[in-house]
Amino acid sequence: MTADAERSILSRLDRRRPGVRIALVAARVLVFATLAVLCVGPLFWLFKAATSTTTETLSAPFSLWPSGIHWSTFAEVWTKVDFARYFVNTLWLMAGSLFFGLVVATTGGYGLAVLKPRYAKAVFAAILATLFIPGVISLVSLYLTVMDVPLLHVNLIGTLWAVWLPASANAVNVLLMQRFFAAIPADLFEAARIDGAGPFRVFVSLVLPMSRPILGVVSLLTLVGAYKEFLWPLLVLPNPEDQPISVALPRLETAGDFAQFMGALFISVIIPVVLFLVFQRQFLRAAGNSGALKG
Image (tube, rainbow, N blue to C red; front, side):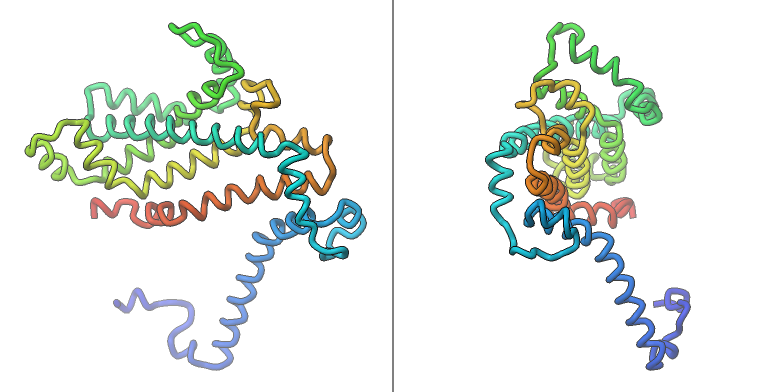
């Protein structure tokens, strides 16, 4: 390790002093405790409110379960509030968005980064330009498009296709894939072509297996984006029985008990946390290895 890499505010000699060591430990404990309170505190209070009675939460918001933990609230949310239906609708919405999103992102990124047709630069510029257009501006035109799909002349309103197809056309995901595929050494593609592999074989047998980290990142972004989307599913899924959790939650606030609403909120909040825990290895690996293929 070089001398420049060892430079810091405190030298090794300073760190050996008892007073400095105690101060560093105290500062670390304070920082981690503050982060824990800010990050975990709201989630813990939401769990406490969901497992307490409505009267207890409204009269003493910060009291810890005066009458015990009421686990039955989650069962009531799942059955009485019909939260199970909204959860299944959300799973279908996320699964379709993930499948079509990965298909568009991987094939689009592969075409721009590896196949490189003559019009690749024009397509890349067009995709990049869409990032500067606020989504609310294209909301009306997109709604009219799914109401009467060009050439096919079918109405997708009231079906999950109206959510899946627009969600799959995500410029950020395509650019992420294109960036990652472009970092793969060209010698690997040349060797595959010499062995007789065609574009499809190269894509399936070479590119996709090497792209697991970025696939995890794009999957996480797609799932979370589909899960938290509110306005578009509200517009294209007018039937309450077809709506996901994000659209149903505001309606549950006025229709059910306060404790049940808190339980529904806790379940809806914990799902993205679980998704991140599932994909955290791929997410962190892709973030740490960005550009490592070229290096």
